[in-house]
Length: 232
Ligand SMILES: [Zn+2]
Image 1 (cartoon, helix red, strand yellow):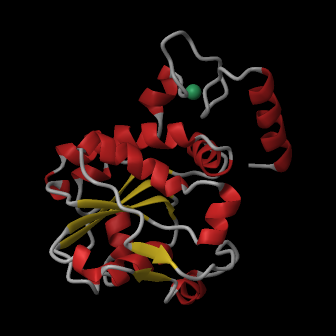
Image 2 (cartoon, helix red, strand yellow; image 1 turned 180 degrees about the horizontal axis):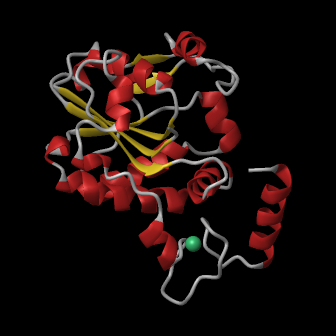
């Protein structure tokens, strides 16, 4: 999204706060955060129906038996990019939780995502958390946890070093950049558990790969992975 378009969107939102956070049209009574048209026509992936989905294919050979899905397709300049931008940079934490909850309905309907013991969001480094004030993946995870009635944990997996921006790196450089960034604090708490790891957007999968390898080290029973969006 261009700087000018972002600036105009921010201005429109300031003047007309009751507009759809994905497409900027005015909301009708009874609509909340997203208009009905967006709710019905967002680019949903239906990944939960196929084990052979694009996220799993991306992770094959990189982590043991990947069981992953994304809820939405991410396209540059599209409505999902606007949604992710709102969640990540404009404190729209309720939107994150709402979409998490909508996605949890799909998880609950899939045989691949049953009996989840613990939901863990991809952590931010404490410095980033302090600047932003919240972890966007945690907001999404809260919506999932509320729907599935499963516990959420933000202490077991930590990000112990800040990473430089990933945007200008290729896949190998991203992997190298992420290696050894995450650590598990209490390995026994994760032993034999089915963990659902939650991220906001998957691009190359380097972050998810680094978290997953760290979690698998702790003798977990199963790892499932969820992202709100997938940039393919
Ligand atoms: Zn809309």
